Amino acid sequence: MAASVSRRNFAKLFAAGGSAALFADPAWAREFGGRGTDILPAGPSAGEPFWTSVREQFVMPPDLAVMNAANLCPASKPAAEALTRESSSVDRDPSPSNRARLMPEKEATRKGLAEFLRVTPDEIIITRNTSESNNMVSNGLDLKAGDEVLLHEDNHPSNLTAWHEKAKRFGFSVVVVPQKNPHPGAEYYVDAFAKAITPRTKVVSVTHLSSTVGDLMPAKELAALARSRGAFFLLDGAQSFGLLDVNLAEIQPDFYSGSAHKWPCGARECGVLYVSKAAQPKLWPTVYSAYPGAVGFSKTFESFGQRDEATMIALHAALDFQTKVGRAALEKRSRDLTTQLMDGLAKIPGITNWTSPVAERRVAVVSFVPGTLDANKLASALYTNDRIGITTRGGKDRPGLRVSPHFYNTPAEVDRLLASIAKYMKAGV
Ligand SMILES: Cc1ncc(COP(=O)(O)O)c(C=O)c1O
Image (cartoon, protein in one colour):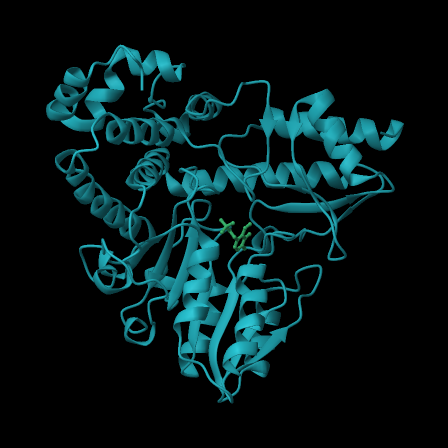
């Protein structure tokens, strides 16, 4: 927090109207730089100037093009400001009276999450991240020998290894539907899961959008399949929360997990677990401690001890910011940048792309092999020489480079990336 905002002024600003008043304070504007928290009021219809104003809500320097949202996003300015403000507030005044103010803020975050995902606050648990959320499901359901859990091979370790390890302890079996590359289409997977499900299946779980090559899975259809066979459905939303305009009322999973630090552009170490009303009586808490939530399932499930409310309030600010930008517009922007990237990669000789060429089967995660170039050397050259941040994927499963553009990226940055890749593919690295 800016030193020039005295404690009295800080209290006054809160009294005067909370965060809005604080954001208007010039000391805050100086601290976080740029044009404050305004995006162009005309909205996405203003075209590139609107998206430039969105980009200005991030403190990344303009010459640094980071396209790695599938791993970690920068916090948007409103989120970063909320985090700093609320952390500072507790350090300046850790009295119970000041801390008490944060409880309603935490519940406001729960409400914000519920609105964002189109469910009720009674069904929202605020966790640390997707890993924790997924594990709270695999720890919390009563499963025993004879029961089956049906998973996709392309699930993240927190939703694949976790089940295999717990199967050793509790005696249930894990059945895995193999992944296919390229993405064979929604119908293929609905059929594959329908063939693999049995009367013993108690849980079905997939990743909404895969982190490996960006395959979009038919969440609604698989949820319906699981429901029709009396099984729970866990949808790992690490790669869809804050990217897709997710509507859980429509998808109807039993569980949905997500992380604030990925596509929502919130603070690090905050996440969500949605638990449907029908599933709540069947899910045991993993942690028993003090300080539960105030409504619904959080009253019995979310006694996680001392928390950092600042990260939660920052997530709320991040969700509000995305809502202000426009969630459908934001999804479209990321999809458009991805199409531009896919089209450009297709024109570079020697690239093998793992991500589906069919737009409906992908969103904004693209993985490819840069010919015979060493992926690690290429990623490092891109960062060091060209100020472009993308990631590598090692191991045996479709290794190479991964690019995940988000709404703060621009067509010019995608062009810059394509030109740099083409340069190294031609001249070596
Ligand atoms: C599909 C998927 N699930 C779960 C996770 C774990 O997320 P976190 O590290 O935020 O717990 C990730 C992380 O990349 C992921 O891609």
